[in-house]
Image 1 (cartoon, one colour):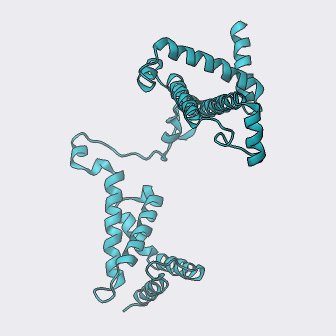
Image 2 (cartoon, rainbow, N blue to C red):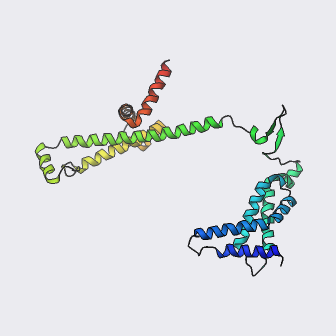
Length: 290
């Protein structure tokens, strides 16, 4: 056994010895020992890696080839059984397999189908000389002029949708609170006074004598309105008919949307959370008028 082979066996044994027991995580010391041993293994087999990279014709893809070899070494350690073979023999096959796979992915001109049409693999990072003598790469010429606009548009749509959903939720919350408050005011004052005296200052709808059935109707109404608004804003307007109560007419759905739009416009002006939306609407109106 050569010195390199013996050193490799020792380093691999260190990695195996610092594995965490099944179901547990490695300690900081174990991770540190494993990293040192793995770096030692890569250092010992570096000449072999360089030889295989040249043998498989992957010099132009050196960084990718080195990463594949590191993966191969890691897999070899995980599957290594000292009782069956020496690590030097076992890791050779792992490295060969990874490099062969890399070559198959990168150098597609080596395939029979590519040879028939005389295809040639080129690197996007390969330096070339431009028409004016400047050095450039193929990667730098592959610029999508619309990518920035598309990205900004998608981000704008996402933020607009999120803000509109919050605005609709605030409209529903405020409308529900106002409807319940109106029910409270309809209760006899003497009955409210007795209930407040018995239950304290924090009273729910049931303690204030409000009919739970009426509260349920309010909840159903605003749940329906929310569904209609979300559909009309983010989907097809006519599709709201299928989601709403079948007893509600198209005209009624349009009225709900129109009334809610006015209420939400007021919210953008009165609620500081939506001041940006109000400012944007105002600036847009000015641009249209100009």
